[in-house]
Image (tube, rainbow, N blue to C red; front, side, top):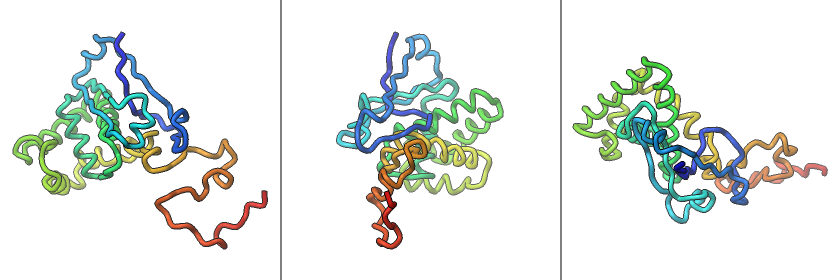
Length: 208
């Protein structure tokens, strides 16, 4: 049994910005046969010194694609970053977009055809590989197909794939669901560092 360490999850959960042991640590067990069965694999490492590198069980990550190729997955990652650019989000988060679209393609021949034709068209427009084109060129090519079914499919999947996962939560400072812990008033209601402090009158004492 070969275990591939992975530092991401497509399932929503509570991310932690305080202690590493509160972030789910995931190992994806795959036998060698299962691993090689996939059409492609996306892999990489988390940047040293980043919040995710400190919290993840390993700096290495890998995502198996069962229908799309590695090249197609890399193009989807590049398109996702073009549509929703976040310098702080590692490639592992954008790989979730490719993983989720790969799953959709495996369930629908129409979706597979749409993705493959759309990605091929981007490569043709890039005169080679869309994934390897410069950022300005990628933005130009993506803008050119805005509103088309392929564009809408990828953009729509970005919303959940990129933002509804523990890695994104940790990067953006979202501590996860709080309803089952009594709400935010007594636990981090005003702990976001990227927003200005509200005036005192807007945040009176809770009375507890």
